[in-house]
Length: 460
Image 1 (cartoon, one colour):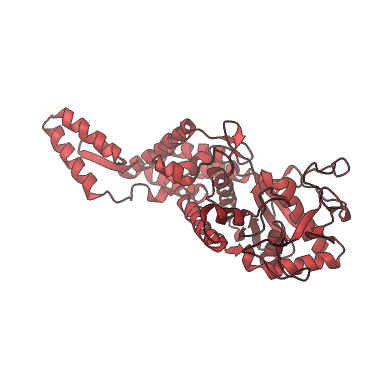
Image 2 (cartoon, rainbow, N blue to C red):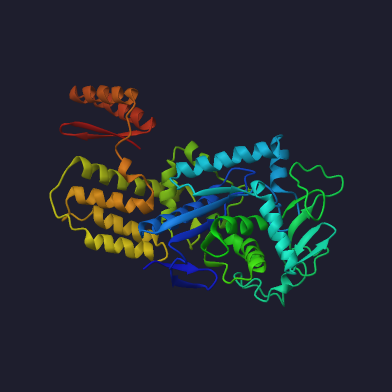
């Protein structure tokens, strides 16, 4: 049985969906800059969750938002809208920024073999739904209006902050956000009014003023409920979303519907850390997937790196650690290519390995243990080559490493010619030239393995 750690209860619980189809919502990117590899670790963890659900024969309806308005630089209710900041930085319109970085994000997740959601939903395409949810909260008595916006009154919910274990009674004003005209330090903006004289590119007329824009949190509750219903199964994000963003989403949704729980399971991924500091877009430790590619790392090496730690554990990034991951990834590839090229007879009974793998993935997505199960298969000399390869490909439905494609890459003619020249040099016992050509082939991203009957070329 699949068990998952539920942030709401702080316990690992058996998972049973509310309906025949698992409803899954994952917080998507704020598209004002590239996603950094810390962000991408969260999306890989969410992809593993989705793949494990599918591996368990569940049908999944997956929704991911695109935040293209309303996310302020403080992650609360102060500062500049991140989209406006991105536009000013690059001298483009906010719409151009949103389109460019949405595509960049989607390109990144495809390189990482992250499955697309069933529904992409942009905040700017759902302004009316957000306004309507705020009106419902207003009708239900959860809002008040200040000079700069419409706010949610958190004192009206007895269990506000339950998921974050917030102590409202002892939370002093200004401890989390600046008070301003707020009644309580935890109150948050549902709709912000454009300031007088402010020239905003993204603003809309609303029942409360002629020009304004939604707060960051309202988009997720409004859009998730539109596509998944008033109650659904799983909501995911990074651990930094627990104390503010997800706490406020719960308040909005349950204030609007009165139904509890709004979401059955909340899952949160830990940080990727560099020099003991979390990776952030505003910091110097901002590494993108392209940074890794520029250093000649296959994006799937980074995916493999993320699989080596449990999603609830911090993962320390260093180039040395990534190189170790590359070696591990290449070892799997080499072993599988050897099994494909050198057929060995043996048993086809992989029952115990399948059971070990299923136990690992169903134990709150234990990927390190699942990788151990994969290696147990590859090293089991009692099994036939075909059984080991087929089982590895079966497990890859969860790993997403592209195991079925190992060895199928087309070798460029240039590399083949170099390999043939080297083979001639070897036959003529010109070892210096042979070594020189091997190095040239390696510099171009390929390895060559000598065999009695010739050689094998592989992309590194």
